[in-house]
Length: 446
Image (cartoon, rainbow, N blue to C red; front, top):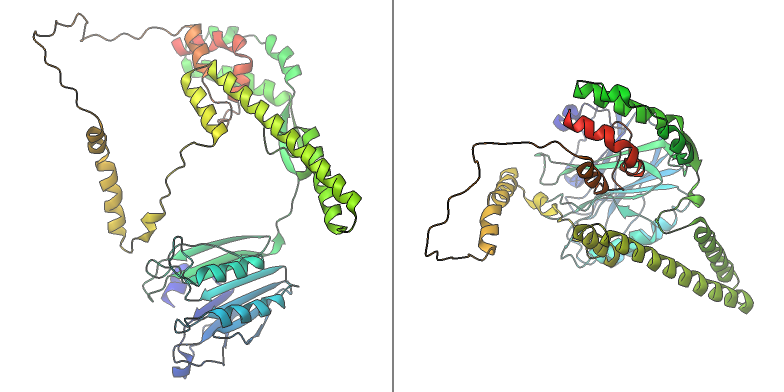
């Protein structure tokens, strides 16, 4: 009750597992809720109890699943929720997996299937539970995937949420002191499905911008005496040109290019290949269709490989003309050898937040020491003292920026970074740098 009150949320369904129903003679009532409980409880700690809002229209049955307590809740005729508890005493899960498989097969008419509960099978990353793989493969064969794999009981993930849905869903593991298991919260839309709506993109007509930007007058910027005023005038001029020559269009998934080296022609080629594959799969006895598919598949795959290699070759050659950093970035992208970011999953393995915080502080506090230990010490024996410095160490000068410096900075900007609040992309600045460098240089020196 304390946790429900502190959440300040009227939950539609509240599921409790391992309720010790054989030893419980009274189930407390919750205002505004109706409860339902399992009746087939064998050991003393078994039992599942579900509370649901009185205004919520659902139907509940207790299916017979071997070695498990289960309540099946049907919501809106297209969603079924399985609340389950499997006691840890059943070491062999073969009977349970077989029984669960047979029951899920009867739920094929439901668009949304949710499995939630304490299954006492560890599905955390790098787990040592021998039953985990068989259990995960079974649910995956029915299109059900885990919503999380983070620990819910010590360092193990025993409390599961598996989903098969196209609806928006969010799942949270909430730390609680009520039991030795963490609480799990699932929030999912019941009425609105995710649709493959067309993606809206903005297309800029650079042919018109070429004409408009060449006629821009920057005299008001060069006459400005305040840097903020000059920047405001500069960005407003560019934003107006971009806005006037930008058109919002919708593209379907069929025409969306996910790779920079894919063209519309290649996309059409892949569609034809996939259509032939479906036709060959539907007519396994037709050797003509099968041979046609194989030849077209080999042609399409060879063409894709050739175009990709040419694109990557061009990327490396272009990067080599800039600097070594760009070159090595291009090589890493082509060879797929870029260093992956370190995962911070081990930070959640700590039961004590203080230990996690201390580990973070220890890591950052020892960075300098670790770097110093990796460096080879250089010992120089100087027979004579160093000559005195001829520099003015008490003075500082900032030389004005010149167009060459501004152009060098612009060319080193990334092309694939997101635009800022002004909506001006780096690709736009690079394209028209010969026009924009003079006002930018003036602003930098203002």
